[in-house]
Length: 244
Ligand SMILES: NC(=O)c1ccc[n+]([C@@H]2O[C@H](COP(=O)([O-])OP(=O)(O)OC[C@H]3O[C@@H](n4cnc5c(N)ncnc54)[C@H](OP(=O)(O)O)[C@@H]3O)[C@@H](O)[C@H]2O)c1
Image (cartoon, rainbow, N blue to C red; front, side, top):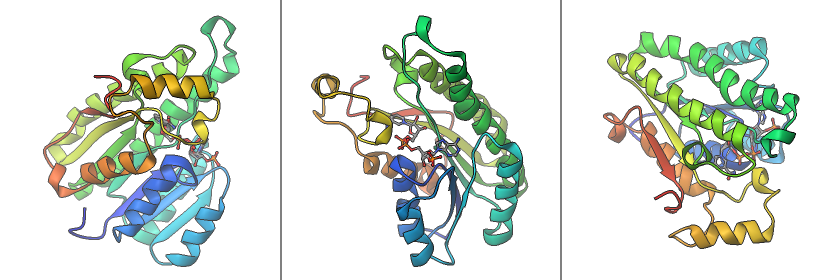
C-alpha cells in the first residue's frame, strides 16, 4: 500500500494487534487515527514522532456519540477515512451455563454493535469517494470454535457474516470488505492461556508456533493496498494452518 498516503482509522490501536497495525501503517507513510479507552506509552511516542500523521483520542467504541465525534474530528484533520480497520474487540471466557449476562453484553456491544456503528459512519463518505477498504479483525474462534469461548466465537462468526453482506452492498462503489481471522497471538488478550494450553495450540499448528502481530499486519496491509482490488467478502485466516 505505497501508491499514495491514505487516511487509515484503526479502532483499539493502543496495544496488542491494534498497536502493531498503527505502527505498520505509520511506517508506510499513511495518516493514522486510532482510539481506545486508555492511552499507552506507545501512543504518547507516536504523538511525538508523527505530529502531522497520527491522531489519538481516549474513548470507548460502545459510546456512539464519542465515536461520531471522533470520526468527524479525523475527517477535519486528515480528510475522509479511506481504510477502516475494525480491530477493537474483547473476549470473555467461561462455559455457557456459568456465563454472566453482563459478559454477553460486553462482548456483543463491542465486537458487533460498536463495529456496525463505526462502519456505518465511515462507509457513508467512502460511498461518495468511490473507494474504500473495510477490514474486520475476526478470529479463527469464529471459524472452528473453542471450548469456553462460545459468545466470543459467535461474535466473530457474526462479524464474518457482516463482512460478506457488506461486501455485496459496497462492492459496486469500489469498496472492499474483508475479514482477517488471526489464530492465537501472544497479546494481552491471551494472558489467560496457561503453558499447557499454549503448548497444545502450538502442537496442533502446522507452522509450530503462536502467531505474532506482524503476521497479521502484513495481510491487513496487503488487503488495504491496490494489489487487493479484486478481493472482497472473504474471511482469511492467519493461523499457521491450525484450521486447515
Ligand atoms: N490475541 C489473539 O490471539 C487474537 C486472536 C484472534 C483475534 N484477535 C482479535 O484481534 C483484535 C485485537 O486483539 P488483541 O489481542 O490485540 O487485544 P488487546 O491486546 O486486548 O487489545 C485490544 C485493543 O482494543 C482496545 N479496546 C478494548 N475495548 C475497547 C473499547 N470498548 N473501546 C475502544 N477500544 C477498546 C484496547 O484498549 P483499551 O483497553 O484501553 O480500551 C486495545 O487497544 C480483537 O478484535 C481480537 O478479538 C485476537
